[in-house]
Length: 113
Image 1 (tube, rainbow, N blue to C red):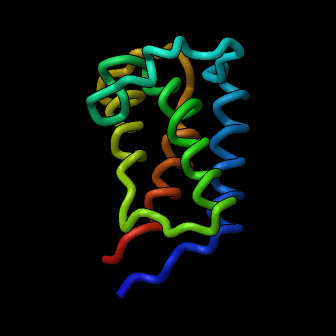
Image 2 (cartoon, rainbow, N blue to C red):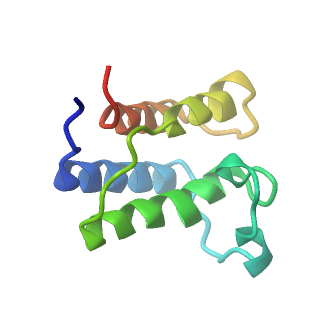
């Protein structure tokens, strides 16, 4: 049985992810258009770019779970998607190696082996 991730460890990882996104220029200062939140596909691939999903959906959702003391999902695959976005089919002219590593570390906090 998998142990529940420590909320403080999750919060620290999210802070690292946010900091890295800012450091490599993937953090956007302008808000999304309201219709961009009406996504149907995983990682909101139908309405926003992956870095936007990280910033405007993923990070706020994780922070909300921490603040509410809620339960975390049983698994996470955000690192695998980051690998696809930044390594397999790179669509961004940034060095995202550390960001991908941080997102994989986030995934490793969830689920059981």
